[in-house]
Length: 70
Image 1 (cartoon, rainbow, N blue to C red):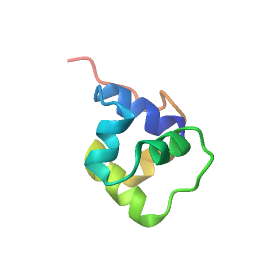
Image 2: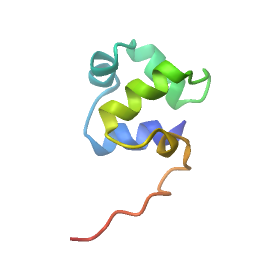
Image 3: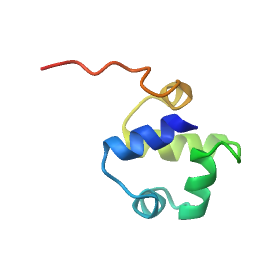
Image 4: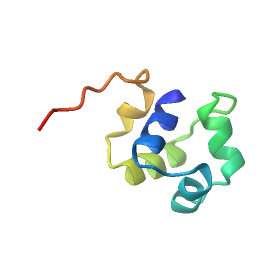
């Protein structure tokens, strides 16, 4: 789930900070980012809420969402 890493880094959060915001351990965040554990509905909801993105965006490849230039 490199998209999770991309979103986390865009918000300038550490794995520990994201863990606090989602209620997940930093090691669990690491496993999600390295695609060594699966996302369930609860984790999808927590992450999409923190990142303020629709759940489907968690499954896009990295850099798939173009940022608008303002």
